[in-house]
Image (cartoon, rainbow, N blue to C red; front, side, top):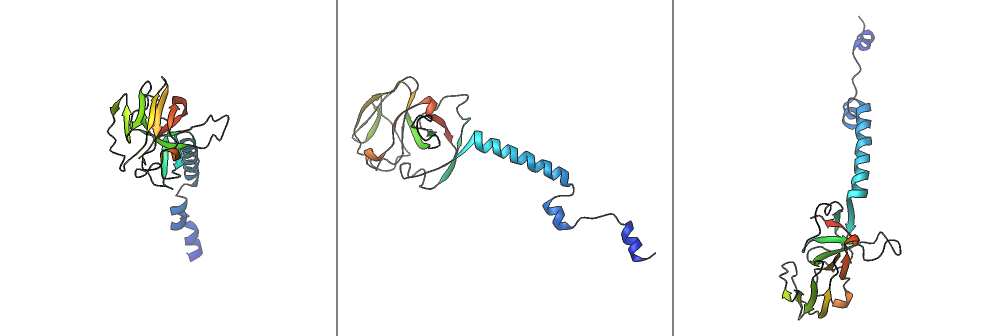
Length: 181
């Protein structure tokens, strides 16, 4: 038997490079790719939203330019809690830029009265312990009574001048989800 006849009888064996890139069964690999793309599309468009920190209002907890993800399903079974870092829309999405999100910490819950006196955060007249705030704060903000569906949000960097912070009451519908990590 000559060598060409022996080569014709051997089954086709794909090269190692093709096996690594495509696999032994290209049809199965294509199905896996389509499923993976569909799952990623759903997860990163509807469940986990990427958010980039822009500014220093959340220092030292989050740095400027840092990228995190917002879990949009975090509050399906329970309401936001004090201390949660959340992503919020401060504006009505139908009126202004719907894609602009802020990252803030919830310090006041619905129905509470929030104020800053001598740089201390007071909830219903009692000082709130905030271990995430590392620098002195000299803010003076009069009492703000929150509505039944409103939360008080503020950044962690209280050494910034109070006028430069985006803070205040955010309604429940404005809270997009909880920031992961």
